[in-house]
Length: 178
Image 1 (cartoon, rainbow, N blue to C red):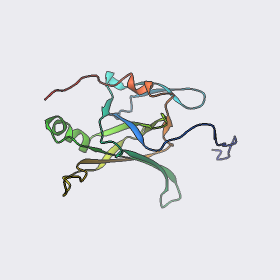
Image 2: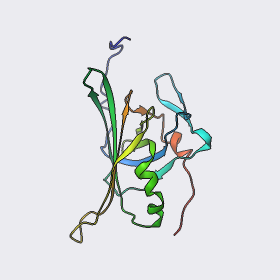
Image 3: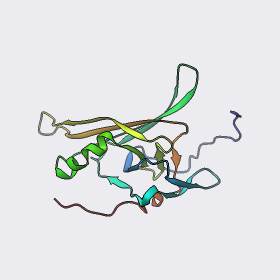
């Protein structure tokens, strides 16, 4: 295996860039999910096993974030840790009916940042909840809701999708009204 750089890494100063997350999509991790990549390694198409759907998470504004960190094990091997955080304000039956899946399931996530980059996390091994906690807040203006943290160990950096439409095309459009 060659670990040598093969091109320059340049910075493009001719565009605006915003921090933060504007959309989070989750779908059930399955080794049968298929990805088509372009020559740059960007994901162009996504086909979920068994005609499954992706689900958009309606999180509280400015509470979602993700990280993709390099880690090293005790034997000198390296891997990446993908982590996703978001807060859901709902405390209703719709959320309670999904609690077990969110708490115990294994997922792949697509996160769209405010600069419209769509990044896939947990593609090879999935991500699981490491926290799913409710906080009521103490004062009237305090933040409240369910804080969800998901993490997974990966063998690659989060992959870019060619556009958000790759994931939005397979999102379940069902609306549940309590």
